[in-house]
Image (cartoon, rainbow, N blue to C red; front, side):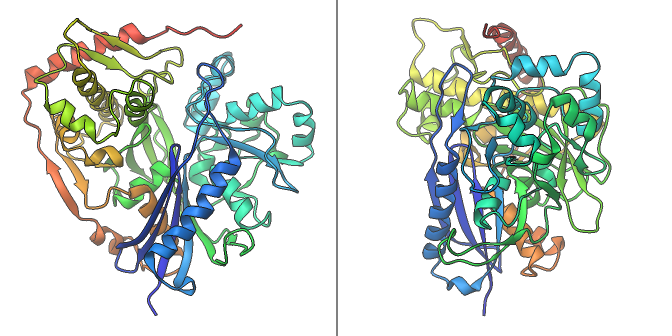
Length: 501
C-alpha cells in the first residue's frame, strides 16, 4: 500500500495542512486563517486555542481532500511560526495568557537592557542571536514579570513556556511529550548553539527558569504519537519538526554550504546553509540551527530576517482598502510606469535585518497630489524586494560567499512582477520551484525521512523542480540609484517610536 505523510504548517496568518505522496506530490491540502489582535501599538497577540483548533481542522480537511485511508499516513511533520511564545499549565494544558507573536515589540526596552553590560556579547556568542524583542526569551520574561504568580509556578515546573511547535506537540500527545526541536529552540535566546541545550548563563541573564522549558530534541526523530481523542481519529508518529524558515530551506534542497533561499511570507527570511560549523562574527545576521538528525552533527544557517513584507500587503487590503485581494498588486504595479518616486518603508513592527531597529515605524515618502493607490501598491512590492536586497548584500559581505542564485518561495513568489524586480535589484537570477508551499513540504520531507517513506536527501533533491527562473535585466547604474534612494527613505523611518512610560 502507498504511504503518505501529513504536514501541518502553523503560520502567523494561517494554518496549512498538506498530504504528500511518496512521489513528492501534494495530493491533499487545506488552509484556515488565524486571527491576531493588536491591543496596543506594537503589540501582537493570538489565542493559543485558535492556533490549536486550526491545526486539527486543517489536518482533517487535508486528509479528506487527499481521499487516502488514514491508515496510510506514515507520519506527521510540524512546522511553525518560530518565535511566537505560548505559556500553558503543564497538567491541564490551559493557556495562562495570549500567545505573544514574533512581530510583537513590547519587550524592546527589556531587550536593550539585556544587551548592556556584556549581555549582547554573551547572547551573540552562545545563541547566535542578538538582544531583540523578536525572540521568544524576551517574551517569556515579560510574561514572568507581568502575570501574577507565574514566576513561582514556572520555578516549580507547573507551567511550560514554549514556541508553537511544543504547544502543538503537548496537545497532540495529551501532555505525554513536552519537547521542542533544535531549530525552534535556537530562536529563544536561551540555547547554546554548540551544546544544543539550554544554557545556564543565558537562562540567568534573561531570567527564565529551566524547569519551565521543554526538552530539546533533534528535528528528525519520533516525538510521540498523536492521541486520537485530541486529533480526530488519527494515531500517527510525530516524526519531524522544523521552524518554518528551516523547513523552507530543507524543501528547497539547500543542502550544500553557500546555497540560499528566501521565503516571502508575513515577513521575508533569507537563509544560507553554512554546514556543520556555526558561523561566528556576524553583526547584522543571525546564526541559527538549520536541522538536526539523531547521532549526527547539527547543521547551521546564517539568516537575515525581514519582519514585514506580506503583512504590508495585508495592511493595504485590510486597513487602507487599496486592494481586495493580494493578487491585485501585480496588476496595479504594472499599470503605472514607476512609483512616481514614492517609497514605502514597511516598518510596521520595527525593522529587522540588517538594521535591527525596534523603534523604526512605517514611513511613506515622496507622496504628491498625483500619487494613486497603484503607486502605493507598486511601492509596497518594491519595498519587499529592497529589504531582501539589503539582507543579501550583508549576507554575502559577512559570509565571504558570492551568491549566484536565490531560491524563492512563499506566497509572494507567485507574483511574477515582484520576482522579476527582485532579480533586477539583486543582480542575480531568482529561481522559483514548482511548489511554493515549501514550509509544509520541508516538514513533510523530514517526517518522511524519519519514517522511511524516503531514503535520503539525494532522493528529495531530485524532486525539486524549477517552475520559473527570473534573470536580472536592470542596469548596474539604475540598480545603485534605486537602492540609494531606498536607503534615504529607510533613514527617515528609523528611531521614530519611543518606549512606553
